[in-house]
Image 1: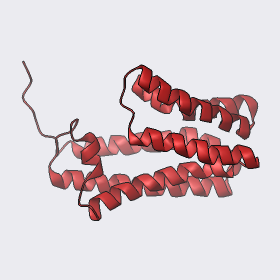
Image 2: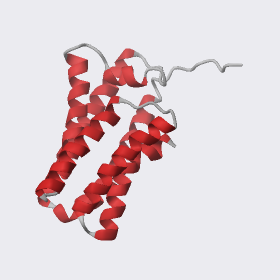
Image 3: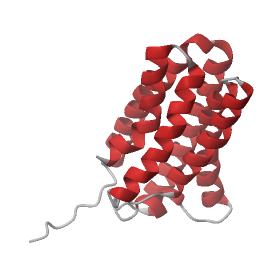
Length: 180
């Protein structure tokens, strides 16, 4: 359920754009969907993480700017900004504050040695940098395909990356005793 709630703004953006062909209408709908997303998380008593608040702020500011200026550029740029901020947070946490941000977020769900956490953090940072760059490339040079890239391409690349990470992490997974 949480996965579907997390995808709500992107799915709404895609569906509204595909039905209307109007990026500004899709932007408005994604802005509303982002507010609904936070409300659903609260209603379902699911954790609202910093990334949810950051995403909401980014869509309201950059989406609002796109609507106000009638220019989809700012909404499209939002995705690059979010990806690069995530990469920066991971890298700054890792190398400046000596704190692994992924371990902080996922440490209760995964038990890994420090070396694996460090490699995982670096691989996610690089992935986010690449995804932000790809978003920028598509929005600037293949504008007519941007929505399809955002919906299909991003999901496929993320899926492949997560499968690759899961396979790679298998050698680091710590066996735990089953709980009675």
